[in-house]
Length: 316
Ligand SMILES: Cc1cc2nc3c(=O)[nH]c(=O)nc-3n(C[C@H](O)[C@H](O)[C@H](O)COP(=O)(O)O)c2cc1C
Image 1 (cartoon, rainbow, N blue to C red):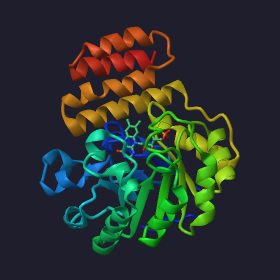
Image 2: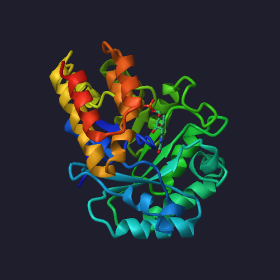
Image 3: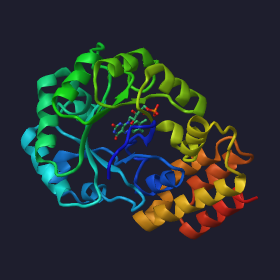
Image 4: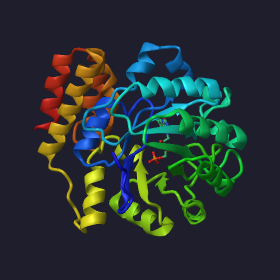
């Protein structure tokens, strides 16, 4: 599958614990152009951890599909890539250079690679050399403590990355510091490979502004899609077709929630109903009776009872 950047790309950001296969399937229904697996530990993959191996699976609608790996040891990355190579239907291997979680950073992975650009370059080159997938990409932040975003982006490009996604914060900025869109614009001016802008893009208007301001080749949406998978359609309608206010009807929202729930149960078994709680919280936000509904959901495990409760709440 060829990734065309002749018009802006609307990508779903990887969110560990949220953007699993069922959620990505729902997001595809609303036109997301690119979906990425949750972060997959290359160590765990190489050790044949069954939960990790399952995370490689994709919904057939996910084309192009990207697998994001975390790692820094070139031998382990090579073996992880070889495992991924055995699977069809994967178009991209992405290297995580942004995760701030201590257990990742302490293993010199994720955002820690931004403190050692030689190691980062070796990791990217290793993927590029051994992957049989069409593209290699990197998801970066602007730096670890200080911003050295242009240097980081150039190392990605020189190491063979075909495109990059840029979360416009440093590691120290975690998920709350103001996103520096000027820095994303600077990266765009300094590399030739496509750049996807990421961070706090939650509305069609903001997406348009970010694309205009940074000249990025696309936007990547994370938290803005949780509880609102239709955001991709709203953004694409607004930016590509000039259509406004295409909010889905209550009926469609109900159908989406039910479809998402059913997919969770199909994918995870009965436990999927429990895992769905966090999504029900966001889907019900702002609706009448939401706090009673949440309380009920938090205390119910039975799939059939939850399905009925969803129907009663969303199709009233
Ligand atoms: C709960 C959560 C999990 C995340 N998991 C990942 C991950 O697995 N891989 C990754 O590259 N980024 C991860 N991120 C970062 C997001 O992909 C994204 O860069 C960040 O949330 C900013 O974008 P947003 O404001 O659109 O959410 C995660 C963020 C959150 C909040």
